[in-house]
View (cartoon, rainbow, N blue to C red):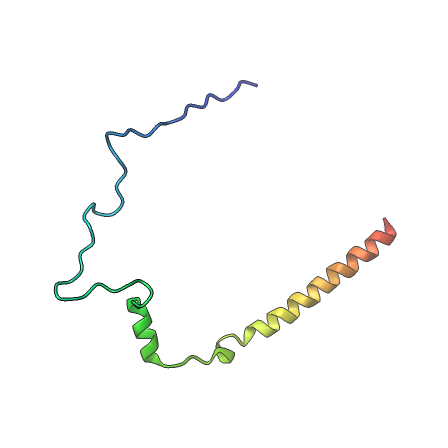
Length: 87
């Protein structure tokens, strides 16, 4: 079988890769720049306005899924032990 020819592409330095529009980000006039740790994303403000979420209600299916996963894991483990005696 013939070998594949592999040629390595070298990026051209004359055309550097640009991500974004190439302009520096600008802070709105009159607004003081904030650090990334204290600034909230726009979606976080809307989520905080909705109020607390009942996690027990949101994730009620998790307990059932974990039980089912445990039963399947135990059955497969028992099958492995049984097969080790047979084979």
